[in-house]
Image (tube, rainbow, N blue to C red; front, side, top):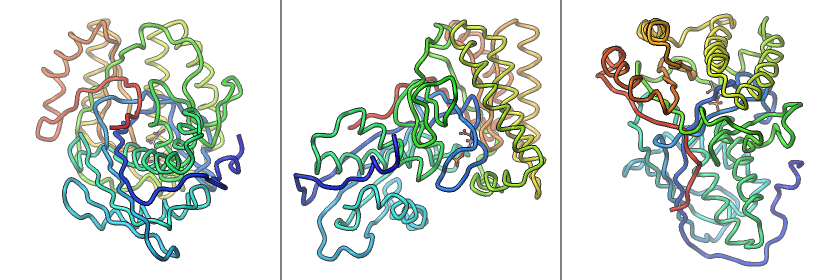
Length: 359
Ligand code: PMV
């Protein structure tokens, strides 16, 4: 599918005003996206678990306005006017306007809230941008009721990508691939697709406990981090590696080989941070407690024989991953040994989820 196919050209119906609400989840990548070309095109394919508990709920109210030469919107975050979000949303609107040309015809009120605590260090851009993209698609559907559910989801993912790359993996569940991969038919750099192959029962209902090690603002944004992959000494090798890891993961997801799964995803997490540490300028997002948690997980895994593992986002927080049938022992270990490393003892119990919902 080409970009042009996402341009809304004509529509039969009209809508003066209304409101749509979507609740959209965050996601955690197993194979990481780090490095992009122009227009949010990823340098390598990535795959993520859609989460269930970490969500953004957004209501987009719209009313027709007189003149249509400027974007007009207000942002209300958790009940309060929030102008800080406006530049990011304005940039998003500018990027997507060609695909949804009705944006300047309306005044919008964007009311948004997260199920996870504000400034928890959990990126809200994936859930936030996907929820907004879905609300915009609901307006498109009101204007053009013939669009199919599959087109709706695909275009929502396409628009979300233009807001924040990884947001395109937050429309559906439970495993989403973004970025063209030679063995995954239908995979695309333009939008996320549902992982099309067999997934072993071991990966159903997989758990992700997010340990909030550092709730502060990141010192380096992911936009800056992605840009540092240009002219990075190891970039080309990393993109090749991500493609190879995806090929291995396809087999692992089919056979349920948890040991190889763990090796793969932990290596992906550490490689992501290794890329940061070897950029120019270099930076470190892990904190001392991130490393203490990783070492404690390794020691416990060795001693217990359980399949507990970790992955990392672009931050200090640790996502602790474990299968459903080992959940009880893993949660006990997390509570007894790992929560002490979290800022104010805060953590979030999440698991693999099935995508966004219209409310
Ligand atoms: O979507 P962005 O631009 O915030 O980049 C996110 C990149 C990682 O979270 C580090 C990896 C990923 O694939 O989600």
